[in-house]
Length: 450
Image (tube, rainbow, N blue to C red):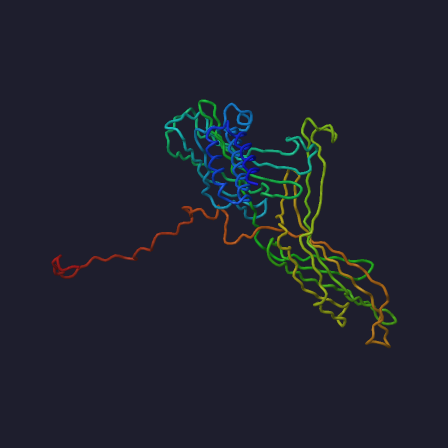
């Protein structure tokens, strides 16, 4: 066994003797292996051989003349002459009120330029506010112009001529009043609406320095009077009246009040009445998108200015109402009342209502289904109702307005200081001033007055 190990070790040492520094390591390994057990010596030789192969590969990779080293060597990333930062100073962008009544929101901040060299020369420094609409069902999937439509809202030009800047932070303030009628930020399964700030600085050597920051634009509608909706179901006399809040929120319950009238009809033999057997509800989110084609692919949809209409719906929540309604068959026409709470399922990531001139829109509906069964009561059997076997399904849909919570926020025009016309008058004057006509008052030393 010892002779076999020595033979294997001699072959290993002859194989690696051409590498500088390795014969000495092999001799040490051979001397140590003589004092150890044969199994341990074999394992130690295996580990040393593995380390040698790894070191040879590292040298080959690091060698400037090797094939693998020249191909996989890391490339140095060019250092930019400066950096740009966008520091927002305005509160979150929230439009208060519907698009036709909102006064917009203020956008303000500072563009910060930080040179990395002792002194650089900037030729142009500009920033643009853009609205980007992206459709997820374009006419041509691999065409960027069919997928994305970009609109420039405002542009800032901070430099009128080339300027030199030293190594420190340089601040450029900016502000803009976003109009309240534009659509809010929306990321749906049919399309995306984004707002972004893109700044670019170009040096005298035509080296661009860019930065992009996305803005989240929201809308908050104030709650108002509850809405009442009525539905009639001919040929029966059933009339459903539903009371819903004017606005709903992505998080929280939605109280629903339902009154079903006309459930009792009298005939010559007795009366016919309807009884609720089952009730369920669901909240649907419907998204629509009109995909327009670019000039290159306009022929696929029949010419320039035309588009393809897409619409799809998803469920945001559903539930069953199996009990809790109040039935009154003694009143004129009969009456059934029920109150329940609907709500959007947590984790469903609902979108707020939005309508864009580009063809993208999101709206929500509350769908209610009521299954009623018909019963017949004879005059002789007033306390016993006989099912007739007839049943109906009453389906209703009501529009829901999903919006963000306004909280304690107010519109920007209500935050401004009072105008001169709003300043109250100065304090009232004395009615009449009389001169003192008595004896002279004694003079007191000033040191005693404290």
